[in-house]
Image (cartoon, rainbow, N blue to C red; front, side, top):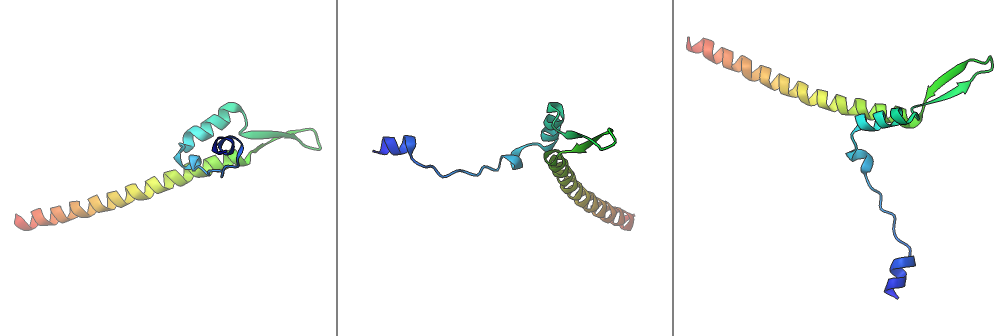
Amino acid sequence: MSYLNQMYGRRSEKTTGTTNNKNPNRVAGGLKAQGVDHVAMVNEDGSMTEVATRKYVASLEEQLRKVRTENTVLSKKINRLDKSHSDLQSFVSSKL
């Protein structure tokens, strides 16, 4: 009976966080390479309009989010290094 349950029984769907593990640059590049980064529409006057898809915009937003977090981390490091540099400068100038 367990073999039949294993084979035909219901399984709980696992929600995987694969989007968190993916590189957003590669996701956006893949969408662009497949040609699904935009949708072309014909207007009433016959002209073509290209509109970005939601998935492509979401991948670009993820890229921005990643760059912003890296930027804040690096700015904190720069501030910390600048503070230690000024402390060392004042220490050296006081000893001379």
